[in-house]
Image 1: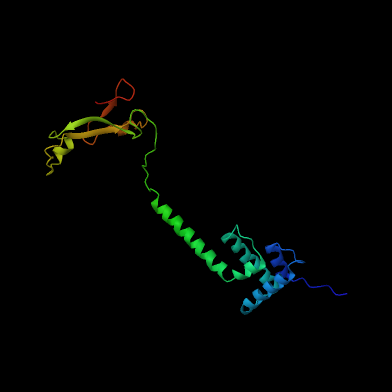
Image 2: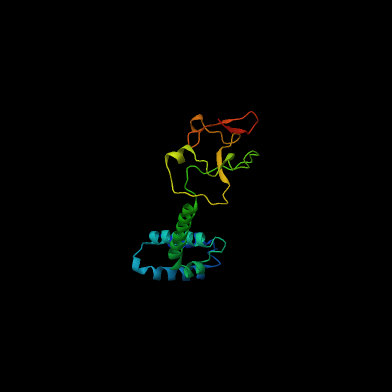
Length: 191
């Protein structure tokens, strides 16, 4: 008695669809015949066709995870699953790229906190410099800036002494004056 040769592509189709071969033999045979006819130009062996069936079935499951995979459904989507999977992958790559572009690319992004001194800004106003009082820098670098008649002054700020303590090197203004912590918590004053 000769041994029956295993039809790997038929077995693969049974495996990926999960149908009972005794109840759906006609459906399986028809679908496999259509797949073989569609892939005739590829000159595939039986094991290669079995691997292609498994590959297309996995793409089908990726595209439609909640839809039942039957032999006719696999055949219906046979030509489209490859292209659709590529399209979905390209869309995902594009979406990731857009997301990365929207993400702030800064090294000094502030951290959010609930500081009661600065209100989470990490900076506090130390004083307001009146209009017309030049800083050392302004004296050294004259400009043609003319303040607006209704302008009242300029805010001078420093890192919050409670939540954003800067190293001693950074404890000065652009014009050379420095600031120091006061006696009360969160208090700053110009030294």
